[in-house]
Amino acid sequence: MQMPNKLPIKTIRDGVRCPTRACIRQSASRDGATSHCTHRAACKNAPSAMAKDQGEGPASNHGTGHLPTEVERRPQYLKMFSVIIAMVAVGLANHAIAQTSTFFSPGVPTDAPVPGNYTGAYRPRVHFSPPINFMNDPNGMFVDANGTWHLYYQYDATGVVAGNQHWGHATSTDLYHWENQKIALWTPNNFTFVFSGSSVIDVNNTSGFFPDQDNGVVAIYTLAEYPGGVQGPQQQAIAYSRDGGYTFETYADNPVIASDSNQFRDPKVIWHAPSDRWVMVIAYAVDFTFGFYTSPNLREWTHGSNLSNIGLLGLQYECPNLVEMPMEGADEPVWLLALSINPGAPLGGSITEYFPGEFNGTHFVPFDGAARIADFAKDNYAGQWFYGIPGDQKQISIAWASNWQYTQQVPPGETEGWRSQMSLPRINYLKNATRIGYVLVSEPYNLQSVISHELAFNSSLGNSSVLIDYSTVPSGALYFEANITNLSPSTATPSTTLNFTFSSSVSGEFVTGGTSVNGDTWLDRGHTNAFDNPYFSDKFSASGLYSGAENGSWTISGVIDRSILEVFVNGAEQSGTMTFYSTRPLDVMRLGAAGVAANATVSVGVWALEDAWAAQADGNGTVLGNVTTGGGSAGMRLF
Image: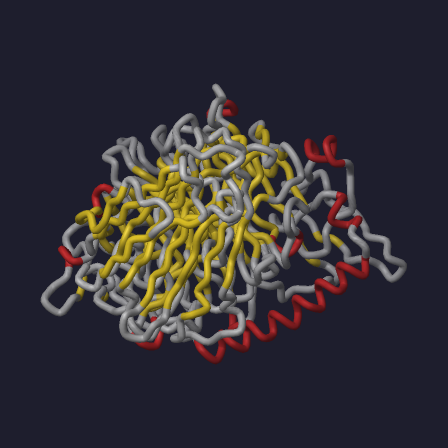
């Protein structure tokens, strides 16, 4: 995680230190030559194993460790152009932060959860959103031995824009009914933010923090300094929890990975059983590089390798993830590296992409060079998988359902006092799609716990549609699905479609979407009128392929939840996440099919979803959160 428009301030200069402070490297000389690190033998980042794979290359000039040769091989004019663009964008971003964000305020409760009202017209009822103010990246997610899911997240409890970054915290037993907890990680002083990271359960007490327990939790995160409001170093720190992740104590010898770089962040840590080591993947953001580190104890880290310039670059990398992912039809799981870029996504702003590959404990090698984007719309970023799920089981993820291009301007901040929501929890696994290859399936986690009642069902709809008035559904949230069966390749044409529209009976505003059986899918939010922003693109589409191998069927399903819509196509081979803002609530749905051959069958169903926050709310709609479990928040607030 970085501040909005996450771009570098530090440019090429003499005497920039590597992240471990073990050496000082010199910048490019006037003739374009670049010197090697003069302390290579001593530097913890000297990539001896990596050099065998990628060749000895000159050091980077951004103070982010010894980077692969490919970074330096980029044409100089392209690098300088990127630096110029980055400097301009940083100036604009920092100006925006200074103008709109209150970095530090003592008015945030430390001994109880932050209360919030969940009755607003835009407020999702089954998607997680913060009690008040601003939320972004999911952090540190894990599931414990009792089946409790822990969600931490980037949180500014002092304002409706990013700024005073802490780790918020919520827990759930079903991933839909969340209970807000106390803020988990606080800033250590009035010029340092707690940026993104991860959490692990140290069942074998490798850290030494938990001599008498097997459920100790260690959070690994970036401390980002902004002395005097100027971007300073980003260093990696840890904190530990002896009560299952509710309260944390910061490690006395932080940082565990020191750095002078201001673009070195977002550590993701997992346990790698074959090597009997903890593994960290972390972003050297503006060098388009990920570093892989190993540790026996979560306190002492050794650099293993770097991986650079894969996929779509944008203007920086961040929020990496490394996970074992089951592969449909395969006996063994596949390693999957996910990364996020912002800005510079094809649709603008921020996206997440993923790479199947091999991992040996220190080096990740993608199977191919393809850039696979996790979501075809514009509101899905920085997704993370829950720690604690075995690699041979389907994994569970949650992403931030917004986009840095406009997230700090969307209407709920001004009208309801909160901004941003998470995506639905997703079940993930890999499959081999016809002519496409590796595809990350991303389908909603079991919705049964929030299904309220059936609104419509028709098993033989044909070329028609159902019209549903859901104005009396208290949550304003629905799950829907439509399915065509008995298709054949000859009848699976572009004119065969499943489509839907959600509209307001008062204002006439609407969002719409659908899928063609040839594989094309679309979403359109351009007919809602409460948010006018040039970056709030209105139409999104994706292309798939119908091969006839899906038992003659084609499906679309989705969840609409007041101001967010998520759709899933053909068994969730495609998924799209889209926020929208109408002046009046949408309360009518049309769901149907067109161009379907006579021998094919169309079935549709729509179900009301319950308000997952209602049971916790008082008479005014305020949710207090968990006011009984756990002690005080970790660390000491110094301001």
